[in-house]
Image 1: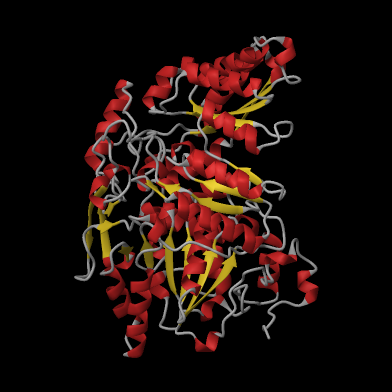
Image 2: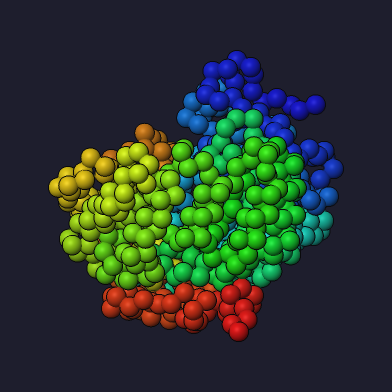
Length: 621
C-alpha cells in the first residue's frame, strides 16, 4: 500500500491533481526496502512538460531494468502546489512511493533549457536538500545533473555534486556500482565523489578551482583533487542499436505536451548549422537500423495504446531508410486510427509526398525553418537552404493541399543587416505569391503564412559561441522593423508576424554562457520568487535585474561584449567532440559567408571521428 503524502483536500484544491499522484500505465513498482539504490529522476518543470521528455523515459526504464535500483520521478510542483507544500510543511515527494525526495540516494535532474534553473533550486528547497553541495551531509542525496545545458555546467556548479556530460546510457552502471561498493565498506560522501570523478564523462565541480583576470575573463581553471581529470570527455553511444530503449513507455492520465509514442530514429545531425548547439554536441550522426525501429514501433504502440507515433530526430529527412520505415508504419497503422508525426522534415518533394500520406491535409499546417530572410545570411549560418528550394517546397505544398504555412526565423544573428531583417517579410510575401500564382482551380481556400522570429542566443560548442548578443532594445528595434515591413506587403492580409520576448532571450544568453559568478544571481532571483521563468506569465525581468544588481554582476559581460578567440571559456574543460579549432574555422567561414558542405558531402574535420561510429565511417562508395 502506498503511503499518501497528500490529503484529498489538498489534491482537490490544485490544478491537475494527476500531476502528483503517480500510478500511470507502465509505472515501475518495486519494494524500496529490497533496493540497494533509490534514484529520483527529476524534470524541473511542470509534469506535462517533463512527461514528454524521451531521455527521462529511457533512463527511467533502464534504471528500473536493474534488480538493485528503484528509479522514481519528481517534477516541479506548479505554483499552487508549491504554496501548499510550504504552508502544510510537506517535503517534496516522489510519485511512485510518495516518499520524500531527501530520503533517496540520488536526485538526478535533467537540464534541458536555461530558463529552468530557478526550478532546480525549487526542487532542492522543497525537498529540504541544502542548495549548496558544500553544505550537504552523508544523509543527503547525491545531486547529479545532465542534459544539453550540462555542457556549460558552471552557472549551476555550486548546486550540484556531479554533472554527467553526454548521453546517459553509458556509465551510470559504473556509477551505481561505485556507490554500492562505497556503501558496503562504509565510505564517505567525499570518497564516493572521488570515485565518480574517475568515471569517464562525470564532472565533480567541487574538485575544480577557477581564477579570474582583472578584466573578468577566466585566468585558469584546474583540478584541486588528484582524482579529477583536467579534461572531461562527453559520453556517447557508438552503436544506437546496442543502447537501451523503451518497450513500455509511461502513459500519463492527463494530456501532456507529447501525448504519443516517440520513436528515436537517429542521433546527431549532418547539417552543421552554426547557431545550433544540438547539431554539434550530438555529433556524429548515428542511425538506428530499420529492423530495430520496426520492432520497437510495434512494441510501444501495443504497450501504450497511443494513437500517434512520432519519429524523433534533429533532421528526420536525413535518416537513410526513411522511405522504408514510412512504408512499414503506414502498413502497420492502416485501419487502426493511428497517426504518424514527422517533425524536423526538410523542404523537398519526398518529404511533402510523405506528409500527404500521413496527415489529414485539411487540418494540418506545414512548418518550414528558413532561419534567415536573405540568402546571404542563410550562408553565414550555414543553413544549406536556397530561396528556390523554399519557394519550390511551398509550391509543392500548396499543390498538395496545404494552405497554412508556418515560417520560423531568427533575429540578431551575426553580421545581420537591415536588408536581412526586411528579407523575412520579403520571403514570406514570396511564399504567399507562390500560392496566388497557381491557377485558381488548384488553390485550397485562402493562404495563410505565419512568420515567427525568435531572438538569437549564442550557445557553447557552436561556431557562434564567441558572438555578441543584441541588447533587449536592439532585439525589439529589429522586430519592429520586420513588423513594419510586413505591413507594407501587398499580400499583408495573408501574412501574420509575431516575435518572442526579448528580455527572456537576453537572460537566456547570460545563463547559457555564464560562469560560476552567475550562480549567486540565480539563487538571489529564486529567493525573491523567480520560478517557471520559461512560462511568460511567470517571468519577471525586473526581479532578475535586481538580482544582478544585488550580486554585483553585470549581465552585459556575458552578452554584448566582444570575445577574443583565444579567451578561456567556462566550458573549455569539456571535450564535446567538436574541437575548438574546428569551431574557430567555422566562425571565420561564417564571417566570410562561406558554406560548409554537410557531413555526407564531405568531412569538415570537426573532431567527432575519434568517437567512432556514425556518418564519419559510412561507406562513401
